[in-house]
Image (cartoon, rainbow, N blue to C red; front, side):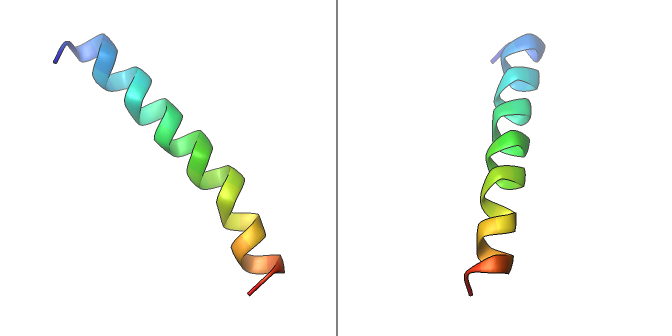
Length: 28
């Protein structure tokens, strides 16, 4: 895996986490 692909995957995972985390907090 290239470093660029790794960065994209990390960015997507981070964005997904930030999207789901508030839902987990507000809707336990």
